Image 1 (cartoon, rainbow, N blue to C red):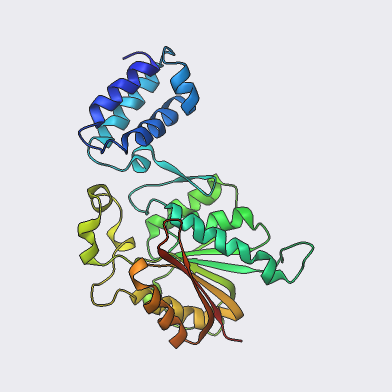
Image 2 (cartoon, rainbow, N blue to C red; image 1 turned 120 degrees about the vertical axis):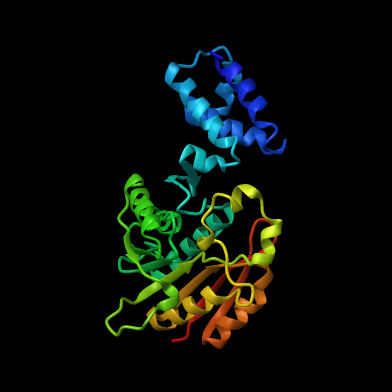
Amino acid sequence: MKTVGEARIWLKENLKVIYAEEELPGIMFLSMNFITGLSQTQLHAFPEKELTGNQIQMLLLTAKKLQTGMPVQYALGETDFFGLKFEVNPSVLIPRPETEELVAWVLEERKSLSGDERSGERKDERILDIGTGSGCISVAIKKKWAEAEVYGLDISAEALQTAKRNALLNGVEVKFLKQDILNFKPVKEALQYSIIVSNPPYITPAEQEEMHNNVLGFEPHTALFVPEKDPLIFYRAIAAYASFSLEKNGLLFFEINEKYGQETTELLRQKGFVNIELRKDFRGKDRMIKAEKMS
């Protein structure tokens, strides 16, 4: 195995018993692109290009990880999100495309919050991402909304370290806080936010049967699962936090479990939020909610 073409054949042979046929092309491209730096077109156009000794070692190590069922993003240690590069490891969830839609929705609010038709932004917006994990939401928002003051909150010290590295990697300043949102106690001097956004745990134990083993075996369960008897536990806690910590007319954004769109909407209504909007993702599933704190 000396060339790009030989490496692609070898990788396919070693992974085809682990991954479904429709998954293989994407996994192979991500792996070969990471190892060689070649684009999809270049990988096909130059099969005779020789690999270096270091590239061959990287390929062997990557294949060994992938053969365990490890998600390719963890095997490579990185993923793309909202056009940015992020470090990922088993202390944090792998960012999903649906969450990119949530970020895009938050960014739509720049102009409406500012009230300035010319600039489309204000310099004093303060935004909090609860359950920040890899920092993908907070970092992406800060990258696109440079004048905003952005915070990321998480209970996991290891996740916060990853988030800090991702902020540095993408050249932005995000303030990260360690806090358990389920045990939040109001403080009069606490910061007030224009926007609070969260993609909290929302998968019930019963839904585990529908999930792939590479998710169950590698991604952090504390960031995925909620009690069967209380699937909205985090939404209730975050809504209570937002009731106290949002400015008047501040906005709360959630990514949600598609099965609990109406229940989450009703929860927010009971907490006093208004102008509640439920939005579908690109797959046509109820996935996001925006609500406004009553003035």
